[in-house]
Length: 484
Ligand code: BES
Ligand code: ZN
Ligand code: ZN
Image (cartoon, rainbow, N blue to C red; front, side, top):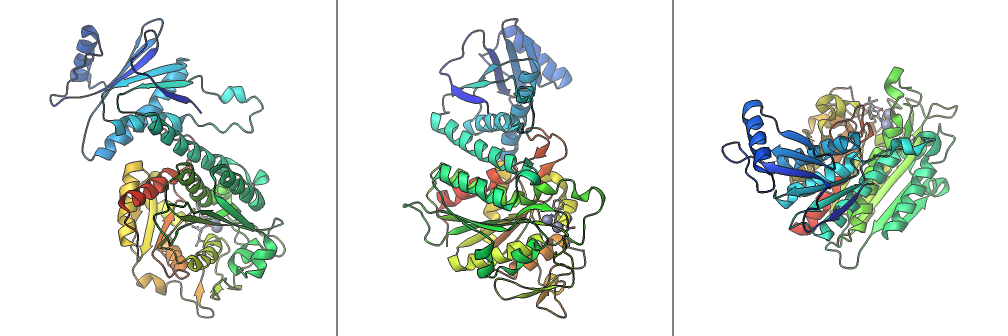
């Protein structure tokens, strides 16, 4: 990861980025630039709407970036994140190792820039025999800004590291990360951040009768796990916990309803919900936020082995519900349902789950946000949407009308594990909501957990999507103290 430090004033002969914003006339004014450069920039701005300039000063570079300030504010922060990604590419291409950022923009925009640069600097090089080939030449960003303190930088770094942990886990292939491996990674993260952790292995899962998790695991040669992370600081603002649940499906073949063609290609990503939620708790604990949070992470792979569960099977779940299996590829909801039913024992004030649950969510909104539904959690959904805008990991709320309940009624059991296809993201949510009795918010990250191409400050592969969202959500809860 690149290093971030602070400077009181700019140094000579160090490559410098000056970020300026347009005034009402669409021009820039700044004492930081020579008159000739200022005139040139203004001329180019006016005539060609050019906003990015790089001047080679032989010993160093001077880069000038001009940004618009628009409403709402969060769009500017996102523009600055993108600029961070762009500057990293520029520095790497020009072999610039050290850049100083000089700007008078408001603090939150500077934080956005730093965040964008840090997130963009991620590489997954565990399997490169020559890891040097992946290292960015760029090394240090020095920030010259009166309001940025070392604790701000520490906070951005903690969050960026948590996003990296999430990306590493999602990028790791199934052959080196099965359910036991995922649980072991969560144990390591918990020990690092001072979180209590317990891993249930197959015998305990059997004695607890987690029928959904065990059914999906039947075709696997690897045993399932159920990880419980508990972060309960002494000065927590809540007595009833906030519970995070994440789908830890380490590889989804579809089971006997085997996924066709290319549909299986990225299915190592099917544990991204668990990785996102565990990484968020890791960040929350590392930041020392005063909130009691529990993470529940059921994990297995889904395979069509000799003993695999089959469509037509009826499963007796952890809470006693009988589920008719209509499609073994709708497995995520089966393992999550047991975790959600178990979450009742905590009397949580809110449960949020995250899962790469349905292709339907991805088809509905594409790779631009998270599809979400809620039950009895209207107020928390509003907050989640705000946090979605703040972090630009946006939330699209889908309807949750009772008519959808009809679609998963079963003739021979209590409910079935999927509906007819239409409204697939919502019927999946309805299935999950059956196992809850508390305020509940469901996030479907199927469209965003993995990117097929680099996009601004997010590289190809695991996106780490949702970690920043959840940390911002927890920070907002702590700030508002609006918990009941
Ligand atoms: N893991 C998949 C969903 C998925 C699809 C995640 C694409 C990431 C990218 C999930 O287990 C699944 O297979 N869902 C089925 C449900 C269907 C059988 C009701 C789907 O969406 O097709
Ligand atoms: Zn599936
Ligand atoms: Zn799946």
